[in-house]
Structure formats: C-alpha cells, structure tokens
Length: 280
Ligand SMILES: [Zn+2]
Ligand SMILES: [Zn+2]
Image (spheres, rainbow, N blue to C red):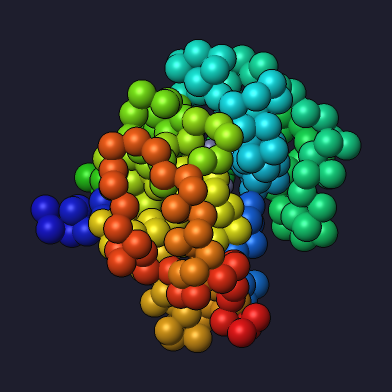
C-alpha cells in the first residue's frame, strides 16, 4: 500500500514536472538552462503523459501566447469552455502547418530527437507518443504489477487535468484574480495552481512569460519553482530567469485587478527586469 502510494507521488512529480518544468518553462520559454541529459530526463516525463511531441506542445503554446484570447489562439474560452478544455485537441479551430511549426519552434527543430518525435509534422507524432506511453505502462505492469500501473495512471492524469484547467479556467474572467493588466483574460486561481504544480498563477505567467517563477507572492506557492531552485542550488540548473523586485512592483502597481489585494512586501522577486544569475 505504501509502495503503491509512493508510485503515485513519484508519477505525479515525474509527469507533472515533465510538463511544467520541461515542456513549459524550459522548452517553451527557455527560462533556465540544464545539461542536455537532464533536459531529456525532465522532458521524458511530459512526453510519457500523453501530451504529444515537444514540438507539438511548444508550438501550440507559443501560438497561445501570441494570440491569447484572440483569433488564432488554439484554446481560448472565447471559443467555448469545452473547446478550451479539451475540444481543441480533437476539433481544432486553429491548424498550423509544418512551415508555421518551424517558424514557431526553430530551436526545437535543431534537436534531432525532438525532430524525430515530431514525425515531420504529421499525425504520426500522436501515434508515436501514444505507442511510447503504452510501452512505458507495459513495463510498469510487468515489473511492478497492476496496482503500480493504476497508481502511475492516476499520478499522470492529475497534472494532465491541471494543464487542461489552466487553458480553460485560467482564462475565465469570472474566476480568480489578476496581479497584472495583460490585455487578455488570464487569471491566477489557487486551486488550479495546487493541482498543476504552480501553473495556475497564469496571469503572472502571461505578464512575465520568460520568468521561471510563476507564483510571485509568498501566498502563491509554486512547487515547480521550488524544485527548480533546488536544482539551481545543486548546480544542475543555471541562468534561472525571474523578475527583479523593483520591476515587479512597478508592473503590479499599475496592473492589479480582482479580489486579491497585494502588499508589495509580499512580493519576493529579486531586483528590475527579468534577470538570471548569469546576467548579473
Ligand atoms: Zn494562457
Ligand atoms: Zn507559457
């Protein structure tokens, strides 16, 4: 029983961080650096959580930042809540071709592994991902047994659900609050942040997309950020980007809306614009 629960927790962290730390903050926004072997290890957790190839995920996400809540956004609630939650995967309103994909992700196309996993922008990338995901579960079943398989599937489905909730609830103006006026409907929602390892501080993220840190206040816990800080402390992560405190205060003072009142003493940002240790 204890070991099954452990598999659940480890699966939650492996697949969840694969998306939040790997696909999102590392590959989509390049908000820190890690050695290539560690990048592949982190990204593998995202790949094995049924979310498609890194190029598919990053391309879709960069489109979302480019057209947030406007025509061209792949998953905005402006096109209906169900569409923003999961419908966009099966009946997309925005279809981008291989040429657009290369324009969106030139950095990932330079990597032969990511090119291979993307299968030349064809439907085969989804089939390949699905096959690897099934193979991974078959190994778990054979080595650890059926209880561990169920624990892994539950552990993987939680952050998957969290990502869907960020795309849908995280852009509904009736929920949560904004720390920044970002010109679209992105919101900070605590219960989405809890499920998604810190990704629910989505208005903060839209205001400062290159920041590796999404929870900007002490009362905005961001587990992904804490784990990244631990990697940085051990020397495994470098060039970790976050806003300087002064810049954060300036942006928040003109931008706050919603129910949450902000005391700047709560802001923990370091110091001006987005900086990493390597920039200082
Ligand atoms: Zn968004
Ligand atoms: Zn993003």
